Image (cartoon, rainbow, N blue to C red; front, top):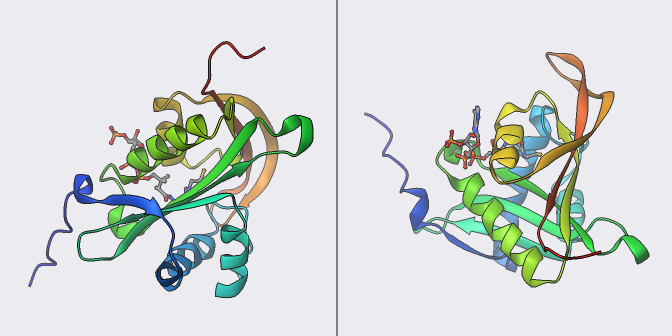
Length: 176
Ligand SMILES: CC(C)(COP(=O)(O)OP(=O)(O)OC[C@H]1O[C@@H](n2cnc3c(N)ncnc32)[C@H](O)[C@@H]1OP(=O)(O)O)[C@@H](O)C(=O)NCCC(=O)NCCS
């Protein structure tokens, strides 16, 4: 029998993480780190280490389906301290079953809105894997520009050494 279609992505709720989300959230992160093709995290990290890393951010968002399943997560925080603390950074993972359904785009827009409301001037992604076409296309279509390229900084399991991109988006106008 065919798998039932998951609900449309517009039915998702985007909200801050709560305690009960972590088992599902770390399962999504574990899958993404095991793939070794998009995140600069060790594939061997345990659930508690993943929680510690992801949860240390200023804000963790989840996208929740009507049946309670967690479809995606993002973490947001300042990119640098002190004089660099007006620039935010973020990371995203959409669960494989939910990809290519508009969830990443919605999550990106929630992150941009949150960083704007929190007073950040810009958002910077430090390590977008150049071969991650889905991510590069998504960020560019949401206003991010490639401002830097670190040659051969990421060892991809099939492609070998590929570049890491620094991507940047201004989110408040008129800042000197
Ligand atoms: C990158 C990622 C967040 C995209 O999330 P998603 O929910 O699949 O993306 P969306 O469905 O919202 O797609 C938005 C846009 O991204 C681009 N995109 C998404 N998947 C794509 C793919 N497989 N190939 C090419 N472009 C793709 C398209 O431009 C798409 O717009 P369109 O549907 O109008 O063509 C998701 O693939 C993911 O979690 N990947 C693993 C972890 C990761 O890469 N995190 C980001 C690290 S920088």
